[in-house]
Image (tube, rainbow, N blue to C red; front, top):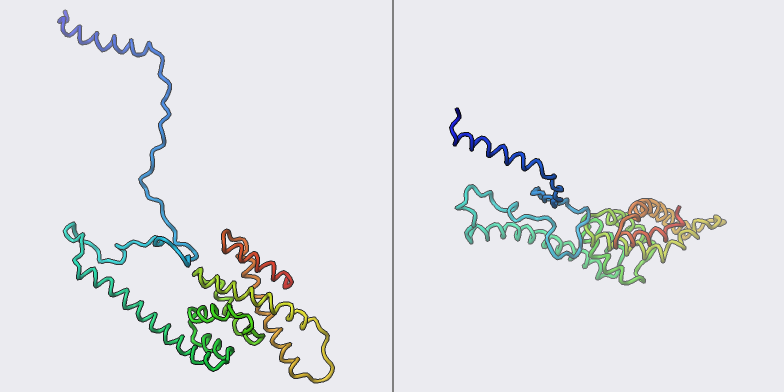
Length: 248
């Protein structure tokens, strides 16, 4: 015979199990999705904004020495200042070089020869200097001549493809000015019948117009590709694309 206590233990769980299965199953509870602990990766923007309120994905730890243990988590003042000075010295070299280049351009500018001053800026092979000069020239439409267009247009082609928003904006402003003031003149001269006899001045003007037209055709492909962008960049390129419709 089985002891009474063992019988009670055996019957107890079975009865509770039977009672549980006799009840209907509850409806499944809709649980909210569990947030993933994996951080979203931030991609570097293709264009660096001219004005921004926060760093673009920069981590201070990337520019500091690797920490070996917890006791080294906080840098002492001397080490922190040493890291700051490294970037400071590099920036001083950049600004000193730009100041020297701008002094060279200003010396030529002071002679009143705008074409040679732009030539000197282009010869330096520093787009930042070209941008600084164009920002001044763009404010004075009377300074623009056909000679200047032949020099500036190759630089505009580079500026429009830059990752810096300020460079793109300057390039768009210069290109818009050229299209509004010189494109009708260029197309009229190219469409005119050849002159009778020798006209050196006209031949030189015709050569400049052909050169500008060729450069504008190259730039029009860039403008067309970027006209589909959204935001301020897209609207600027769409406006330029409309102005360049006669080139297609």
